[in-house]
Length: 235
Image (tube, rainbow, N blue to C red; front, side, top):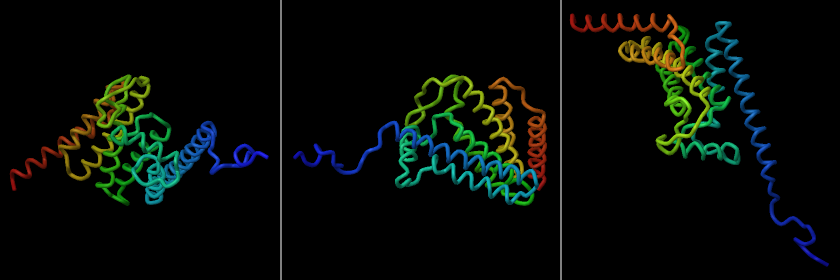
């Protein structure tokens, strides 16, 4: 009688089909995104209720879940993450696909940056860090309309829908606004001026005039910078 392989006995571990693996990965990404969005909404609700510390905790937890996909660490047997990290490594450790998960990650960073500046926390360093990290994540998508930067030093590019550029530029404007607000609160008025100017430029880049609050914050930073300069001279 035929034996072993010819008889249909399993030889080693069974391998999942490419289709099954793809569906498994898609389901895993979907679950991760849903978890993150639930934490984000919980943070938003806490913020609206003026429960500032709870909001910061929820946003921070959401960021830690996002970090599973976007930050370098050993993923163990989570191959859907290790494959993604390998792709990011080839693109200067940047995500170069404009996905709902990446957009959620950036908006949560910006929400946390705003929350950290509330008087109950007043963590200007943390607020600055979150805004700066958001700007770095947006870098591949904001260089030029119709392209996204790629390769190990982001020196190459590939075609990308114009809509991606507009959405990324809008988030870039918000990131510069958060960064300028944190810098202004920390007394770095020159840096704040630069950030508010960049915020205004980012808004113009996707066809929108800067909001009045941007001009007010820029004028305030300029006044504070002049006052600081006068005080230094008189001391």
